[in-house]
Length: 619
Ligand SMILES: CC(=O)N[C@H]1[C@@H](OP(=O)(O)OP(=O)(O)OC[C@H]2O[C@@H](n3ccc(=O)[nH]c3=O)[C@H](O)[C@@H]2O)O[C@H](CO)[C@@H](O)[C@@H]1O
Ligand SMILES: C=C(OP(=O)(O)O)C(=O)O
Image 1 (cartoon, helix red, strand yellow):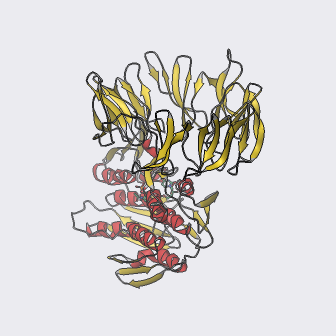
Image 2 (spheres, rainbow, N blue to C red; image 1 turned 90 degrees about the vertical axis):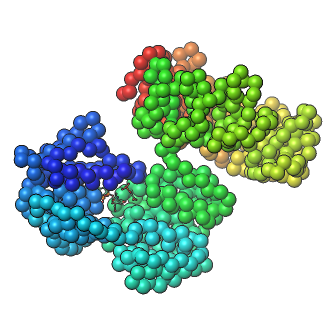
Image 3 (tube, rainbow, N blue to C red; image 1 turned 45 degrees about the vertical axis):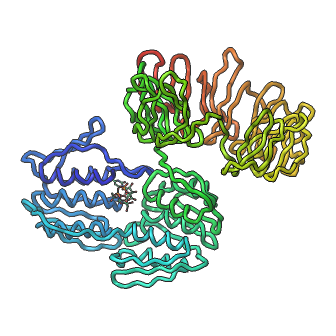
């Protein structure tokens, strides 16, 4: 956690030396610790970095000296850290440009109670803190102030749901900037010394905020405010000047249906968007809170998952382990075999038996099966012993169904099923909604499903009525109102009224993925966007879909060709060096090339590289 860096100052002040690891904390962008280290140096400490650890030592005598330090940027952490070191240093210290955050005032009050000599004066937007070092501190009992960010988060959750709330034991003074904004947004606020009442109005107004150091609007409330503004009746701008990249929640809010664009460190939110539940990823505490708040008003189910969640299999020659999306080794090389992550779980084999691990690398289903398949729609097929007894289990490892019929997922509430060569659809309660009458049936998407009747393909709606006449030799699924179909041996694209928007002229067209169709003409593949414009003319022997704005393409002929990656403009941004290249997933793609396999990021940099034979190399 981030706060782990706070033990540097106290240890150094008390023992004259400290060895601590680099801090973790919420991953929303760069979070340097240079100010912490410079502050320690100003007190006479030497700092060395060794293998991910910070080794800090006071000069001879084992005691820090008083020193002067001016923070070039207001830092809560560096202020607190220097304070805790300086209280036991020899002589006086001065911290200029120090943070005014209430957490710092609380710390000062407690240190004073413990016997420290501290004087803090406000100078403009920051504090100047004078410390006179003492020999020792004494133990005290102290109560922390209430959490102002938690309080504000609860207010945002109430405001978005149109509710009423009373929060007691809150320090009103610390929430001034936040309260002002809720008022401007149209909420009725009554404020007593220790209590806040918020009553939401039917109509929320857009309110711009700029996150700045205290007493301004806190950066830790920026994400939650953004969620609230998705429901306001207009456009609002949310700017963060403390953490310029703290916007990892924006693409996720957009995934729920919000309309937010970024301009440098400002999010521009178009309000009054109907949100729809989805699976979203979160990298940090406040982003999670923001997505939960949005989920409260989204229709259907919203699932907030951890972005760090997906792990990738790596091998040290014989045994398998896992790395995370940053190329950091997280699960030891202990498994004889593993699968890729599917629905948050991966198969692992230990001492001949299969089980499952979750995103954290924990064996949530003990290895005890002779065989196991990946999770699909929350169920995995596993077998015991000789393999004759196979059962379906859920993610808790409980047997849920002994029937082994492989079923499709439900899409738009319906599931296609087959009986004696005829296909139909049933609902979640098992009731047949559309009888077994088609020669083949596809999954529902955009309210329509492709079906085969008298050897030709058309589309039905959810009542089982023909929506687009069966005229085609092939019919693909609708995505964003567009589907590929074949007529007279040629592929084109139709809209939901069945009219051609791209006339049948191609050898092949894939379904739409992330705004692009793969198209084939004269044995070569390229890409067409959803407006029907050929964005990348057919020129490759093989191509895969765009993910994370990059698509794998096979450059050259089958004998000497290699896989590389193109962007939406068709620029070959990752050079063709690979014998195989998978589509990106969460910014990471698996690639292989003669005897080597590894993972690259979207810059084409290897996060992990290993020799497929005996050893592995971490670049
Ligand atoms: C555990 C904890 O208390 N976390 C809070 C603390 O984080 P933390 O103390 O880590 O945040 P800081 O106040 O130090 O950071 C403020 C700005 O200073 C920069 N900076 C900071 C240190 C440094 O050595 N060099 C440097 O450049 C940071 O990148 C950032 O742009 O204050 C933040 C700002 O209110 C809050 O969002 C965090 O919730
Ligand atoms: C960023 C936060 O915490 P940390 O500094 O511990 O990552 C936070 O509290 O919002």
